[in-house]
Image (tube, rainbow, N blue to C red; front, top):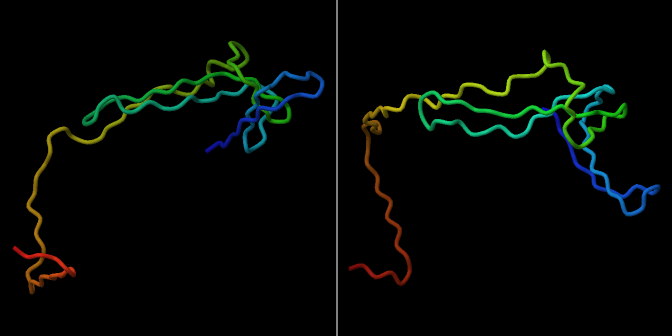
Amino acid sequence: MVESFVSDWPVKANKGQHFTYMRYAQFSQNAPDIYFLPVSQCSASCGEGSQSRRAVCQAVTKEGWILPGEVPYGCKISDRPPESQICNHGPCQARYKWVVAPWGEVRILITLQKNAAII
């Protein structure tokens, strides 16, 4: 998994202006890179559904900093990862089954509380 952080800090040469940068924890090449926005929940609570995410092309500096904003060029369409997948939480019909403990001694633990009234 790629970890990133956002830093919002003023640049000395441009007082009052703030720039936001994100950086991969591992070094990236000086080329646009694909970044994923969060994945959606499965469209079905049971049975087959789908999940989606949006891939955006972003510029990366030679130091590995990802510049904010989407770049409409630079990333190869052939390298674009899939943006949807099938998800399945199992069949929609619930299956029921009796579940019992093994035979043996039955022990009942009774706890009495101080000042408890028994009616």
